[in-house]
Image (cartoon, rainbow, N blue to C red):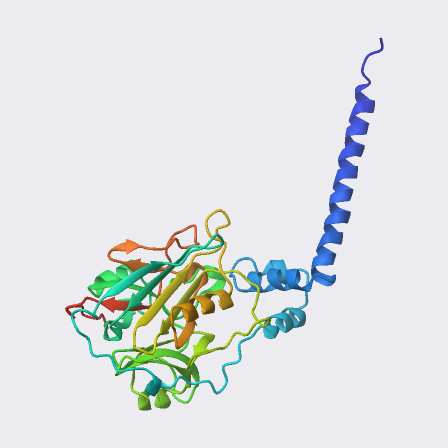
Length: 337
C-alpha cells in the first residue's frame, strides 16, 4: 500500500476551500441581489425599514441601495398626519372617585412579542417627568419615576443621539412640563403629544403659541400619530413591515390613559411589532387617540418599583430626557423642574 501524498492532499483541500468560498460569494451575492433588486419587495422593505430605524445597523440598507432608493422605501410607509388634530371635546372630563382612581396592568403578549399595558383610569395622574440635569445628562426611567415620587411611567420624547452614544440630556423637538416650555423655538411647528389642563390627550402639529392657546400642560415630540378621533391612521396594506420595540400612549373617551410598551430586537425573547400591530392593540383597548413615542432601545416601562419590560440594549435601560409618569394616588408626588 502506498503512503499518503501530503502535497496532493493539501492542494485538494485548498481547492475545496476555494470552491466553497466561491460558491458562498456567488450564491450569497445572488441571494442579496434577489433580496434588494429582485421580486421580493416586501422582504427588501422589511430589511430596509428595520435597519434604518436603528442607530447601529443602517448599513444593511445603505450598503446595497442608494440614498434615494432608501428614502423612497421609507416614504412609502410614512404616516401622513397633516391636518390631523384630536378633538378634546370628544373626551370626557374625568371626575375621580375612590373607586375609579385605579391602575390596571394587562399582559398583552402573544407568540411573537412581549407586550405590557397600563390603564390609568385617572388622567390627572399622568404628567411629564424630566431628568434632573436636563441639557447635560438624562436619567433612567426608574430614576425619573423615583425622583418624582411617582408609581410608574413610560419613556416619552426623542433626544439627540449621535451614533447611538447620546446621554439622553438633550431633547428633540418640543418639551413642556407643568405648563412651562422647557424646549422649543417660537414659530416652529412640532408634532405634539401632550395633555391639556383638563388632562385630555392632545395630538396635532402646533407652534408654541398654538400649544399655549390649547392650554397644554405636559407634552413631548415624537411621531407618528396612530389614532385620531377614533380613526386609525395606519391602513391595511400601508403598514411598514419593520419590527421594533414600541412605546405608545393613548386615551379612551372616558379619559382613561393607555400606556403600552412592546419589547423587540430580542429574537429568542421578543422580536418586536409593527406600528400597525401597536395601533391595533390600542384600538382593542378602546383608544380614541393614540401616538407613537420614542421606541427602540429607549422603550421602557416601570410600575410599582419594578422594571416591567426588558429593554433591548445590552447595556440595559437608556438615559432619557423625559417620561410620562403616574403620580401617586394621594397626589404627594412632586415633579422635578
